[in-house]
Length: 472
Image 1 (cartoon, rainbow, N blue to C red):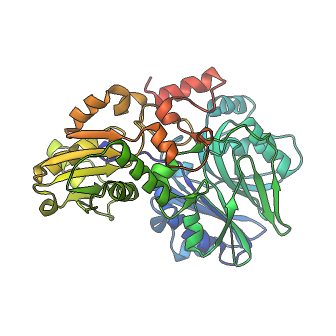
Image 2 (tube, rainbow, N blue to C red):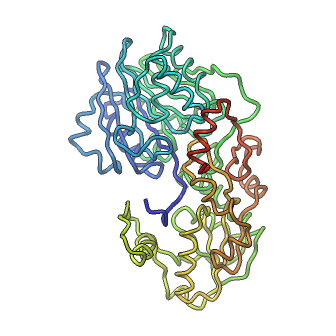
Image 3 (cartoon, rainbow, N blue to C red):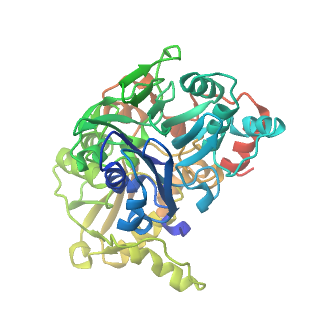
């Protein structure tokens, strides 16, 4: 994706279902609902209780799957995955779910998150004879289970999960069992649902809504669930932590607004973000303009609190995928218009407030402001519904290197000058906490503060992440 279009990307979206005659087709629909969580690759693994069947490829769900490929995915048990690559190259071999055949049978895994001790674990496993087929963190979990001396599947999984460190929500399967697991701090969401008497697992409730499943509850931090012909069994092998580390960026940007995440509707939380933003940075203008689509809910809250009307000043082209970067600067500069277009007749002569969910590099925002100026806007004010991003994420968000985060390099005044806006306001950390209902200690806000809930133990892993995430 061209740098001009950069937005934070998350790794990834999960779905699984046990005991349904249309398991692979419902998984396909579940992944369709979760497409926003990963657009690079996708895959489905199914089972007819005797063997596993796999289909995966690069691209969107609708590009990879069709009626023929879904018919290959036999059985009443299936798991699926949509992926962005935060670790591992963007190659079809890294597309998930991954699966292996070993002495005890077959095992498949789909993973959302990032491990912070993956480099050390991979080196240790390779020294002991493991051969890796991919460059993803997820395969490490499979290798740990396969090499474990434990006898039972549950014990093998617990051994692997106690060996890894980081953020993970997992959906796994054997020939006859669906498994869900969430890390002890609960960084990434994972929901349990039920449709037509069959249990299912999904990263977000929007996937459950699409297949008309009832959302039962979130899988708890540190919980493992096994689902098979004996029903659902829950295990909690980890000590209960003093606090959780729910990724607050799920509320700000990642999750679909119609989902319930960490116990709250995402749209309503984003409205709260906008309301608190309007309280902290009031401004006199003619109307509020959301940056589609993720800025809409916050802009609506800003509009309600400020009393200024909401106006659709930016139109998004929803049919844009990846675009080829043309060699000339002039063509590259036109690239922003491929995705967004300004409504000149609405903007001309007006004082406007642009509400967006975040600024990472600042390049896109700067070009957008320029187009508003060219359209004749009298004043352009910008409001951002989260604090400034100053630190990279080690837990599954593909933030740019720290040196490319605009808020790390520049002061707010310098950012305002760079963007060429009449005023700039970021929501404060306290305003962010006021917008959600859980205690502040239960959220991960490391990308804003640099205070990481999990620390590196191995110098090997610390160096690997610093090299990747911090640009060293």
